[in-house]
Length: 214
Image (cartoon, rainbow, N blue to C red; front, side, top):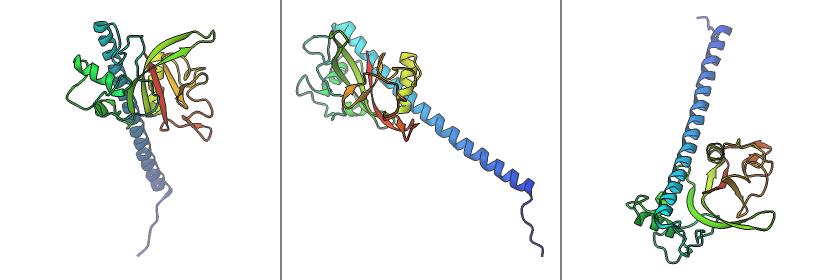
């Protein structure tokens, strides 16, 4: 019995099929990542809309108990939600006040509301931005910790209309990168040395911290 190997044409067909399968997997993964990033955008936007609605009714943002135009809680790092707001400087406070007004779901925990599909976390925070002249302006933000750079890029393009590699994209506008517990003061999301760049190449799956100013 004579053994017969693959012909060049058969090998080409097999390689073409393998290429199509691999391309399909890559495309599927890209679509999934894009969908997840858009989900984070939707979630952040919903929380900001809830804060705007709260402000329209109360002339202050939820969590700003001393009514100084700045949410009292000020952390840029991940926080623990227990549902109880022991003091004004508590991440739960903003969520609880929004729940009391029926602006976010009250039948699920604050930690569930804060969790993103990429296993990141959102919370409200207030701070002051100092300009070059030394003038301080209170700002309120949704802080998104342990989130993918893919989501950061999606937020940047959707809310600021700027490409992630645009000059100052991570340090201007409403969407900013948080570096070492502070808002970035210069650079783009794809600048060398940022968490979205690994070994000189952009890595959209890397994790970063995002501030969305509203």
